[in-house]
Length: 378
Image 1 (spheres, rainbow, N blue to C red):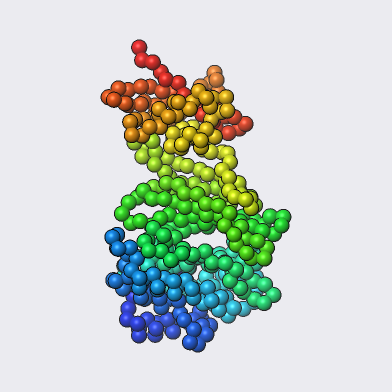
Image 2: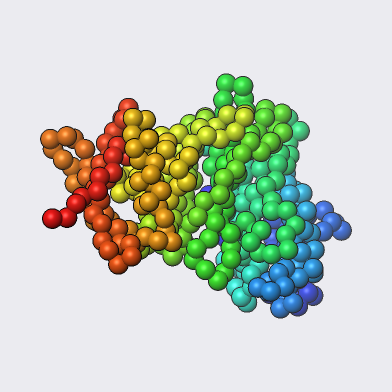
């Protein structure tokens, strides 16, 4: 269930009149309590826009914190005002109300902090929860509500800490919820891409939290990876089961012809942290490209154990990006006799070309780099 609300940019008196007339959602707002949406009017001002040299203006930082501080209580009042029913019905009703408001609201002028959009959902396997993601321009925040005997309560809010530069904002923010484990706890994975607006090459950051049965949220781990924004769906995040998630990215390729390649991270979760587990890649070409992009201690996990000693110096030679230009054939070929994939590549160094063949097979059902052979030219 998704609803988009663009917030208008006009003088304060008109903004207040518009917000007051928004209907059922604002009718539940307590008299005299702060409206978090009004903070976005301040953020629309020219002097609140980020500057590559000066970062986020102090006035903008204060307005951002005001917006995030008061958003949870404001949404909670909206949930409380809705009739009793299943969480799915409540989420649908809230979503429909937001869609109705979106149809009435004019579009604002361009701003790094506009427009405001709400995504409302009942996470699968969590009928007692409603997750509201508020996206406002380049930043976002997640608010997780739980319904109990006393009604709706804000369980937890995921928000960027006060930041001086827009790299700290939750850009391209996405989440995934695992089902509950046997102890009633579950994991929430949150991924974001740094919203630096001058380059397609950015950093994707994944953070994973364990939500205990009593509602306490604890961060168990994080990792950062490179990502390229100039493609469709540069990042996706999915929960596989109660203890596994999958993060997919488009990243920089070692092959300048391909430019980017697909990286997949299957992660096992436990209270002590997150751990990468197989499968490491879905195609031989992606496996070879990632093998070259990783430092050897991590690349070794993509090898067959019997080949580690032999491949370590080859990895050092072929992954030296300052010296080499490595071009892969577009597709790997399957050698029918051995049952292995062969992937050919040319290494250009000091104006000389060397030919290599990557031999990739399956160990315990998973793709692994088994060997890399240099082909001597006649």
